[in-house]
Length: 446
Image (cartoon, rainbow, N blue to C red; front, side, top):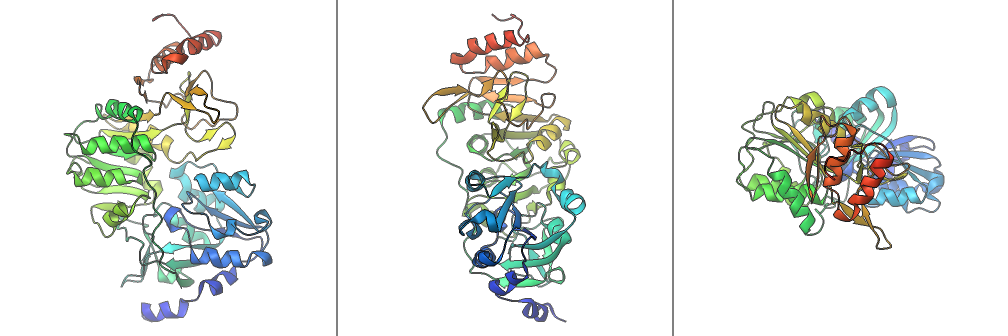
């Protein structure tokens, strides 16, 4: 049987495909830009006849139709591996929940701990001549999803970039049950936020000064890592490599500025390695059919031994806040889940294993609450209910606009002193007073 004949036999409408979904089942929507569109709309249309359908996904970039049906929670429950603003709003309304994850372990979660899935449905590229549908910029854990699903439904989108890889970046038609040709919407775009602030620029300057020629880069999501990327593109650095969880627009700018060639990488020499990507059309166009870029599963990209094998690994991520013990919260505001653990700890651990490697967790020293009050991101202790994303022994460099400190090898009083030194001056005396109460202050500087 030719692949074209098999394709024709498996092709159905979205409405026909979702008829296989029954009440009480577990459904997987894939990941980020791969979240289905036509299939989601068709499933939402069946809401009244379905109850307690549980859906997994993550980093939603648009509001799915299943969120818009009356009495959503009676029909659908969203389970997120990493929450976006859309998912935070859904959680507040009572029909979305966070699933704690160490991102590098996610493929194993599916294969070993979840073990069974009723239906997986997600967007892919058109089939190639060998019968493969590419996952686009979403290799992540998608092969594992397909392996444990009873039914796999792919929604073809000819605007999805075809992202070349090393392994587990596609699914073969023989493993697909239904094919839906969607409306080919543009791939959802994620901007880098507004123009960098003066705080962003100061933090970026401090980090870029620590990056050597030949370094291998990982950038997290957010304004500060993006600003660092922009400064790297404008710097004199050369022979840089990329090995990252998330591919972002900044890497395109750095590459087009001639800074990236991967010539010094110990692994995957000459290739930019990533688990998933979300950005602007510029980035999708760059990733499409680009042999320099390597789409790979997250249990490879985020494996601490793989990261540690890459010399001069530089990891740059954001955080919500940090306490004087060095515990970093990068995902919640008290008990309110903001995003997710993702792979930050993977890269904090992996970068420290790297010869010459450094991990930087950066943030502005303060933030304003809705009432306009200024608060310090460096706190005596994390707020009640806040998540510890990076444990205190693992924290390496911490950077604010007031400086950068390395916490490795420091006792509690040294940590408190170091962190207070990069806190906003308005809060330093208050932090010292709290450190004294907690018996972790020694007056070496004051």
